[in-house]
Image (cartoon, rainbow, N blue to C red; front, side):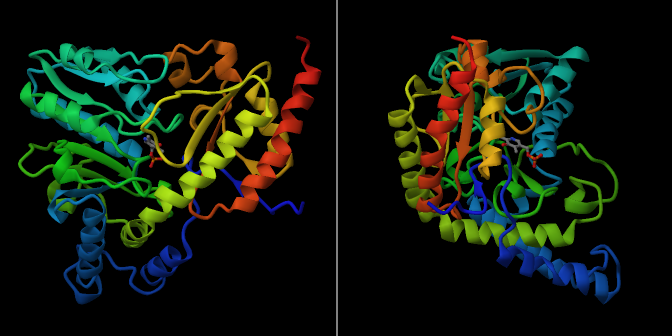
Amino acid sequence: MNSPARCYFDHNATTAVAPEVVEAMLPFLREYWGNPSSSYTFGRQLAGPLGEARARVAALINADPREIIFTSGGTESNNAAIHSALATQPGKRHIVTTAVEHSATIKFVQLLQKQGYAVTFLPVSPDGALDLDQVEQALRPDTAIASVMWANNETGLLFPVQEIAARCRRRGVLFHTDAVQVAGKLPIDAQALEADFLSLSAHKLHAPKGIGLLYLKRGVKYQPYIVGGGQERGRRGGTENVANIVAFGRAAELARANLAQAETRVRALRDRLEAGLLRQIPETVRNGAREPRLPNTSNLAFAGVEAEGILLLLDQAGICASSGSACTTGSLEPSHVLTAMGCSAARARGSIRFSLGIANTAAEVDYALERLPGIIARLRALTPA
Ligand SMILES: *Cc1c(COP(=O)(O)O)cnc(C)c1O
């Protein structure tokens, strides 16, 4: 079989910038490079495109454009939500989160812990589920915020964030959700969700890196995390990244248009890849064998092999996948997500995440299905039992 030039199965790490998105942003690099805060027309005229982009990203999550704060990405948005909840409620010094959050949340709350804040890391079951009663029991009178991701970037598993948001609301605790992995894969309705804060990142959505948003529910008090000029209505200092904001707006529009395809065609490709690998490769199991989950993600444990070896041989075959998150690749630590799910270190170290996108084809899936069994067999033959 002809091998495709590159099979990219790592869409949870980042995505290609869509050609339409590049087209949309180019005028703002070439011609309209003024500062939106300037008083002359060359700067002021950017208010229109910025407003349009804000409306487009708001439409993707069914929010009001005034509830959108543009940030540098998912990491900043997560940090900013937690920071604001603590800064606006100085008497509350407790944070609730989970053991399987992205490092953009975990590392930030660990830093806060060192500064004297109390943090509860909620455990998950072996299939990656949270116990809702346990979530509720963790909420204390001094809890400032609960931050629970919507979809896990490593396993694709979804948490019932609407139900968690409701329980937090009843207890007077602010609620933030990291929805970075949900955007473009499943519908997001911020009004129905009723979270106080929600984070998105553009580069997981076919826009450039370095741009994202924090949704801030109307009426929720906010204290900026990045302080400077009065941009973003005083909620985030720094000259607007105009080209990237326009790109994010265009990508949001495309994501809305492609959502049905992401949910059906991508899911079918993922299911075909996953079922094929489970069938063809002995001693292979799925991590987090539970629904609901993202339609694009498959996390599989191959017994008796190291993910590093698999990734090396996959790379030689032109296949991009990952072990754990991109942020922890290169460290010898097993994934904190799989560890929290009770996986042994050996199983976690033999686990690979495949994450598909709308550009993937059935031919690419077939190519991976053709190559992987041989790769695993070869590595197993090298490893003494
Ligand atoms: C990628 C990712 C982030 C970080 O977003 P950046 O824009 O890269 O800072 C945060 N949370 C999750 C779940 C992610 O997958």
